[in-house]
Amino acid sequence: MKNSKGIIFDLDGVIVDTAKFHYLAWRKMANDLGFDITLEQNEQLKGVSRVHSLEQILGWGNKTVSESEFERLMTSKNEDYLARIAHMDEADLLPGVKKVLDYLTENNIPFALGSASKNARPILKGLDIEKRFTAIVDGNDVTKAKPNPEVFLIAAEKLGMAPEDCIVFEDSVAGVEAANVARMISIGIGDSERLKQADYNFADFTEIDIDFIEKILRK
Ligand code: G6P
Ligand code: MG
Image 1 (tube, rainbow, N blue to C red):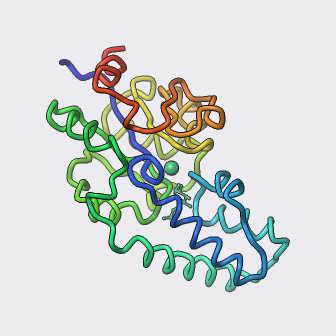
Image 2 (cartoon, protein in one colour):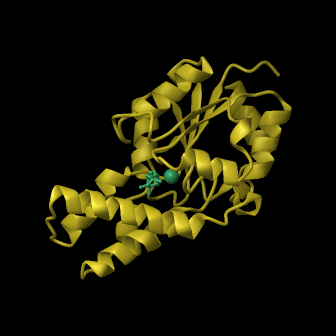
């Protein structure tokens, strides 16, 4: 099949279920500061950069902190998070993801990562899939966080594809918005009501069959 489309995957919540560990680490930090954050609030943090997540959380707790305390909180949350995901391996790929990655690899269809995370490379390495990506664009490469489309536009460029020819898999509202702003095809993974702005919706990758992938690649 002639490939004229570029595929871009978000990481957290699409390829791997790190969202719960981000939540546990942020929640521990909030609890140490004397307040709590709910799972519902956590939904709003998906796809949101580390800095913006902390600003948001401190706002919920009505806390103002000095610049150095802000830095300290970011560092300690990240250390806590990294400790929680330290033992991740191939078995932690979300169900159904391997089948799609295998199909793309076997058919020489290049794909990229477009993630807000600064921990993306070590996570992909742990999952043993880092080398399969033609391009990895992560939180270290961008200055503007999702819903700004910068991360996806850089990924498209690295794939050598026009934005309109890119397909983005995303689990966050901010990420779906970023893909839409970039005029890419957005595929929402997760709650279809929450991600109703996406062009296509699936609860998870087990719902995505190869026929669908072939169909969107041909579109
Ligand atoms: C992803 C996650 C967010 C996280 C962000 C930054 O977008 O969905 O919850 O805050 O990446 O991740 P990092 O690993 O750099 O803290
Ligand atoms: Mg995500």
